[in-house]
Amino acid sequence: MDSMETSPNPRPEPIVRLAKTSEAEAVQQCVWEAFTPYIERIGKPPAPMLADFPAIIAAGQVWVVEIDNQVVGVLVQYKTQDGFYIDTVAAIPAFQGKGVGRALLVFAEDEARRRGYGSVYLCTNVKMTENQVLYPKIGYVEYERKFDQGYDRIFYRKQLD
Image 1: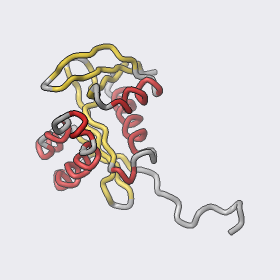
Image 2 (image 1 turned 135 degrees about the vertical axis):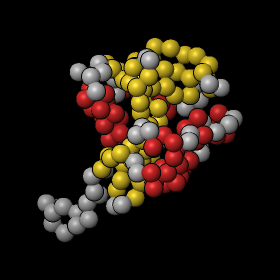
Image 3 (image 1 turned 90 degrees about the vertical axis):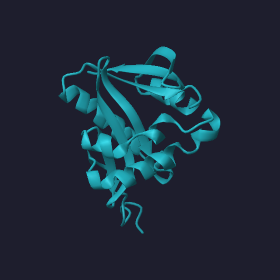
Image 4 (image 1 turned 180 degrees about the vertical axis):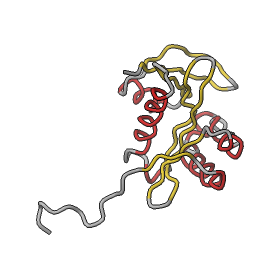
């Protein structure tokens, strides 16, 4: 193959779209695969694993990343009294580190702007140390640590352009 040629099967671009009610099982499976490694570290299932996905999909709060007709990423976001909240960002392990999470965060930030918000916020468990490295690198600033809904959490906020 000539070095100037592109791969015959390039990885398709992630498609971010609103989840369908028929996809609740696929959404839950994606979240379970993404968060299962944290159970032992935290000592219990992370909060996203306990979500009522049929209900939050019906409420229009869940988006998915679809690649080749497969749900490979999940985003849960909604407005709260504190602003626009990114509740869950998940990618199945085979797609972690391949732009799925980044696509979801960019989408969430764009959606917040579209809805008129000047910032977004999210949280992570204190034992999810990878996120504590990632979020500051992409513009999120820690603003609070607290025990919340049974979990020891760190809250971050990002100002939007």
